Length: 365
Image (cartoon, rainbow, N blue to C red; front, side, top):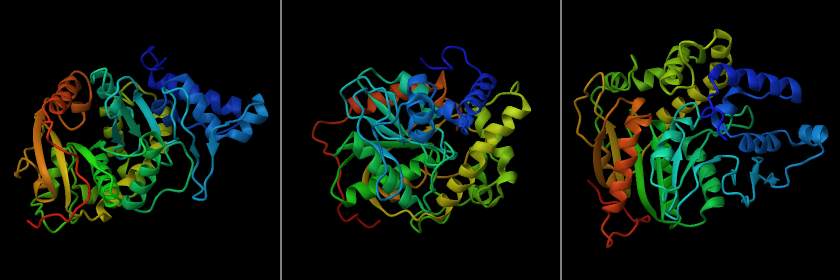
């Protein structure tokens, strides 16, 4: 059962991970419990991360974990569909026989933001989130969005070997999902749909789209800096923005003790900065893919730009939909119910004649 759905708080999560760290004699990041709130999933992940320690302590070992030449742990598919078939995959909804939606993490790497979306999707629509490497305190981080996408494709294909694929992401997650789509289509796989949840084209990432006011884009997200300026800050300078990000996602709240805040933000700050820096260095290439762009209605500042935010100049076709909420609340209840219903409706309304797209030479615009 889910720790937080049973009434667990952020304070209790921090206390539990501290107790686990002490009892198991390993460092269990607080972020791990927010990411894997189900006890069975948490236990399996601890086996993957600390196999020698777990084997010594309990006389068990992770029979599924393998380490390929890349040095990154992978695993064979599990017989239990509720458990991760790969360390980077978090199956948030496993019922249904439709093509699963793979949703990529936002800055900071936690996929908690997709839990309520998964709960609100129809029973027939599975959703699998992709978490970041380094989130659990382990591993060498990828040095580019391209490398990150290649790593995530390897994870995706342990669950779904071939397309058509459904991909998406909220915020920066949409940029990573875009690059995943590009690489899949380049090797001949098809992408049925790319879902971008309030994803903005990073400044300087393409010459095809003129971004007139990056500071205002930040303000629309509820940030007082441009996204590029935010990425250039040192880790400790980014902490106020990371705190805001974490509280709006419900990871932390005003009653959370300072020691828990420090522990949680300490776990996330390096990843948050790393992801922001990778996004500003990434260059977008035109892609013949259908995009569903979902934007929030209730933003603090209205940016003067086209409704599709320029994605139409990079992609084959863009559907733009608006839902209640702002950048963070659009993925939380009650607003996320509208988002889930809209995603389900666009799937039902897709004409049967439409075929998923694979890589071909994009038309010039």
